[in-house]
Length: 249
Image (cartoon, rainbow, N blue to C red; front, side):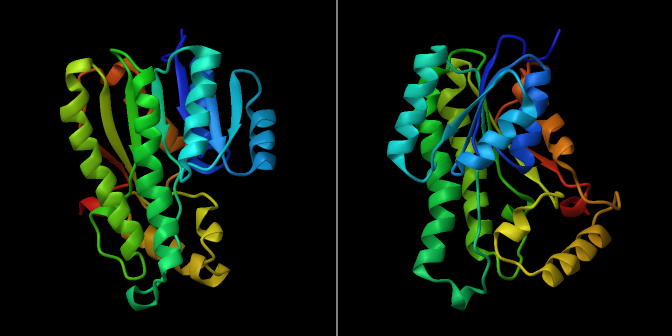
């Protein structure tokens, strides 16, 4: 038996990286999974990669109309939702004085507004036993030059997990946060960093991580599975850090 047998799960940003790794594991553990993303081509590749048990939904979480359509899709196809991994996010790194209005709106719109309303639109499909996992970051508790907006949005999501825990605990819905450290995905290239900058960050990350390596998508997926499953049925409101010890010492 799988840990998620018979469960219905939505993973935003599920076509690549941490979201894709989690979708693969969820399906192996018995869930029916909806993955979302803005790129239909990437979604199609992910579906072929995962195989059975997954449905794609093309949409942008920063657009409320797309979230309304996602809710309608899940309700029509499955009638309920058991697990939400609010994973989708993004950033446009830049030093504080160089942050533009457009950069600010993109990062806040995706990371905080998009996640906030993803949860708001979908939580009514959940009942007792439901689990929501917000993807935060160790940057929410660290100070890093060039990441002021990104870090602020991740700190806001940590606060949101606490508030929703207080609001939905009586309904038996658990809300937790999962804070990755430096994870080996392609997200750095998507933010526009050069290969040289990425190599420097790789070296720094490994030097600062007590376990001496970058994390993997599977490291994240196993943690999200724990928070999604009944293994964590008396855990809510926490932020579980998956960083190889980087932010802990």
